[in-house]
Image (cartoon, rainbow over all chains, first blue to last red; front, side):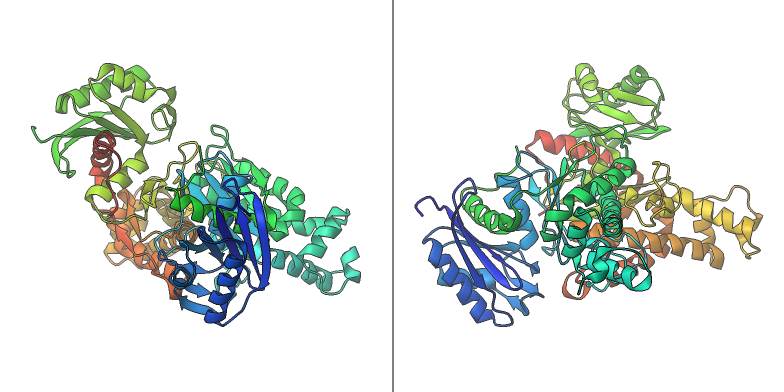
Length: 316
Length: 316
């Protein structure tokens, strides 16, 4: 464990992954715990336990789904059932270390920038396809967090005005057309409403993963559902690319791990045809993320380390 | 003229506005020339003439519509009929000064940041409504220019998949629903296709400005056309606000000067209802730009000045 320069902790709605990382982002220690929900004290205690179990005296980075204020207060963590928890301050009291708390998508992007698919770029958009659709942006060599710490909510770019209801409360968001949840729902709807032939008809509780596995196995119906999601991913990315002009778009998240080879070419074709000045510019490639489930923990650790060492080190 | 710290030049498709500015962005000298089109040498000559006429030895900033590479090469200037013109290098050869060439929307935003509606903010989105819809972004204290110098093309965020054709070649862009050009076209279409009552029916060649003047005069039809454009501006801004989380959205451009009081409340309502976490965050206000036609010249001059003096000075 002598190589550990930081601990990074990725807090999911059910599991909490803590990683000790070296200065290049290699994982030199790992611990997985259950996330306590609706209990701020237990949450703080679990993070402290995980960090102490891996290393002492090194910076600790934490990535958490929700709205994180600039001072590391978790203003709203829907998966954790907590609001207005001064997480960074509470952790610094208990750990003999500097602590950095950020949005989970931001730290996952930072992991990819420093140790994954985004290495060497100064302009990177990351999209994560999972239960929902997340996003994070690195532009001009800085992480986009925004005035409320809510920048990079790329899953909530509208793609269909008045379209499918999104968990965020709005209608027609990219998330409502391209998440793993939606891929499963679209498949179930079509199976129930039509007599389309598909191996999925025999299965219980069809979800995004089953659709993807069937598609990879050549099921034409499942392929069409994924291609449709890929189309909407492309439509959303047209606006995102026009806004940020990234050198590359990194696509990660659980739902993308298997489906990338089907969805990304469809999305890339839409982007290549529709972004402004497509024939006079470099159109960013859509590439899969590399660090998978470790991206958040690696990124949180490296971000905490780099901030204490004098600033972000991603980009060229 | 002793106060001039820089000259800023805003190159439009027909007119070229050169301003001498002091360090606060106050205009201390002004010259207006005709823009030569399709003749790179004449363009360079006109800029040199304008700059020399106002001040000697001070930095010169230039804002131009089109794709501007990081080295100040104008890769594509559709309004000027030029491609791949190394404008910054050519100007530096002829002027005894450092020269900065940037996109016109970027310098207009910089003007508003330093001397107009964006003062004091670190996260600002600017939208310009004119013949087209332009945009520029300042986030985390940096100007978003992107990998190709094409960041901030906010007029080309899709709002209706497969919708109205946009001059950019795509369909359904914000620009195709909210530009001054489109406001005029929508009004003409409805007047031709229906028997709607409106004072515009008597007028020749209805354009966006006429629609706006009629609306300000209480014409219900004209109001409905502007409100529809305001609605789509709001839809586009939902995605833009979710992506960047700005503290404020500054709306400028010729078409906004008169129509802001009608369009912005409609757009603001859409943004306020639909951005993610609207009830748990500060939703950015939509405010009119302040510098009007001088924004580009002032911003180009201040940007050239600030870059030579050690970096951007906007934000807090």
